[in-house]
Amino acid sequence: MTQYRGRFAPSPTGPLHFGSLVAAVGSYLEAKTRGGEWLLRMEDLDAPRAQPGAAEAILRTLQACGLRWDGEPMYQSRRSAAYRTALARLEAQGLIYACGCSRREIADSGLGPDGALIYPGTCRNGLAPGKKARATRVRIDNAVIEFEDAVQGTIRQDLAAEVGDFVLLRADGLYAYQLAVVVDDAQQGITDVVRGADLLDSTPRQIYLQRLLGLPTPRYLHLPAAVNAAGEKLSKQTLAPPVDARDAVPVLVQVMEFLGQAPPAQLRRATLDEFWAWALAHWDARHIPRRRSLPAP
Ligand code: GLU
Image 1 (cartoon, rainbow, N blue to C red):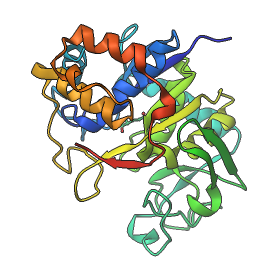
Image 2 (cartoon, helix red, strand yellow):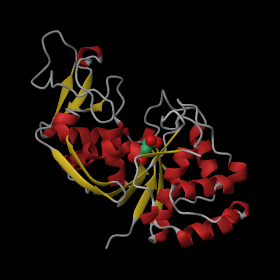
Image 3 (spheres, rainbow, N blue to C red):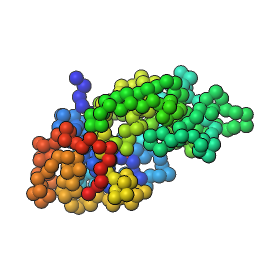
Image 4 (cartoon, protein in one colour):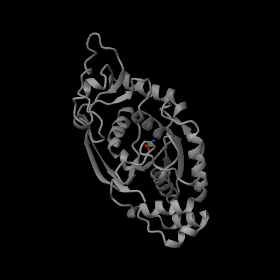
């Protein structure tokens, strides 16, 4: 049996908030209670959206919360060569094509499960005369992807109908998250992906790319995503407050409550070491609420 390898992969667009701490703690406890490793990856691919100093601030907050990662963190900003190689492999198989459509040109198209436009395949058979290549897309022919999520159950997606040929290299020259995450999970030898359920609908795209690239598919466990009172996912855009790392135990206890682990009330006054001793002894993934989202405390 291969050893369990989990990971936490934050995007350094701002300080760590409650929602990202849920993903960090959930992935950490799953890894550590299975005798596994917990790796870190900074998803700083989108340099324009990255906030200076945010990556360091996230690492400091994780440390202050008592979360210790194995090995050196991986930085996506240093991995373009690997993404280029993966894209070249798909190109050699005739699986990608240049697309010249602007967002406006596909705006009439239907919306996929994550609210993104379903690409109607306009440039599939070559660019129309006068159209300039902008993005690179992967072809999808008849790909119905089904997988078993440890919390969310059976997920099935008809990629052609629900997503369409999706972007791997963006018009601004950046590699897309879907490609980078697949290449990096394989490079880091990840056996188990534990993350927020806001990424559940991206998973079939990732499994599709794993198959095209001949990479293994990890097991998946999607935790409920933390949402605010308006039902929006906590993020920098929705002004989620940063985690207060000077007083980590109370928020860690809230994370355990959020994940259905029923921590005792007195745990709030515990030391960090006492908190982790309790969490590691009591973590049980079967108690995680089978919901895609839940209100943050
Ligand atoms: N970087 C993504 C985020 O912060 C997570 C990606 C993943 O876990 O696959 O939402």
